[in-house]
Image 1 (tube, protein in one colour):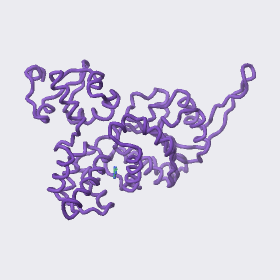
Image 2: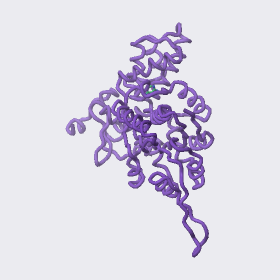
Image 3: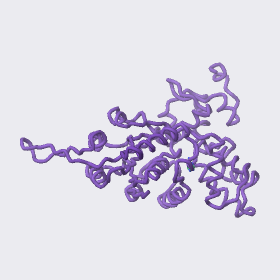
Image 4: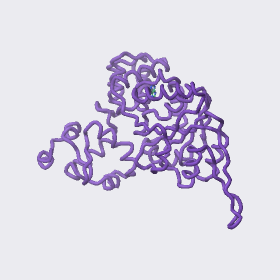
Length: 357
Ligand code: ADE
């Protein structure tokens, strides 16, 4: 498999993305991050941990595509960031022994951006578009006939002399990824043959991810050390992998380099990551609702303004895990903190909240 990506364009769009801002990454860190992630990325479906329902579906589709010598169906992966959507697309390309071209919707600004890419592909190759819900209308409309019939509809001439040309395209596969499936237009969503949500990872799956990454990086870790890192990674392999690196640095400086239960706990304490794995934004969000809004309900825009964050970032990046763990709840009148959320942050449930639950 070969990967060719719009790195320059990606950097540009990364710089503008509030998701990245929220993770406090500057461009240099992103570059480091990309090579670190590439190093530890699984190459085969059997090496890819978790998402078992999706893996079963993919195994069949990959096998069928190989047997028929036909491109695999267009696919849409959605779910919170860091769960391995790009990784999975690269794994699929590798399994099919084909090339993958990786880009993201903000890099496809002008019609010629997408047209250039589509025309440069070959039969069976994969085009991966991250943040696909952010495609502009014109680019999206170019994709409709491209995905459905493998044609580009081009117009030439002006006014009365205008002619439509159908330019054939290679039989490619589009893999789209989004944190926000609901923001995708109906016509675009309908053109994907496989639509699948990626789920948060269980503690056991994340323990396997941590042990695997440590092995690749030649870091010594015992099972309990791996379990501690896993349990504080918000169900997200990208976080688990970053923590392996941070904890390993700590183990090297403070001890003999081996990650044990004690070293992992000390390192995570020093990193201000509590036992639930929540970070400072998660905690600030929940404390705000408790302290300023008596536990809620309170609207997402109000929360965003008070935290100085973008409402979409809160909805796509922070909320999904807090909702899944039951620390906050979504109601028609806004977000509120559950009794577990109160307990987790060490607050007593307010009397108003007690009567609500
Ligand atoms: N690294 C990141 N995601 C992974 C996964 N699902 N399996 C194995 N390694 C990973």
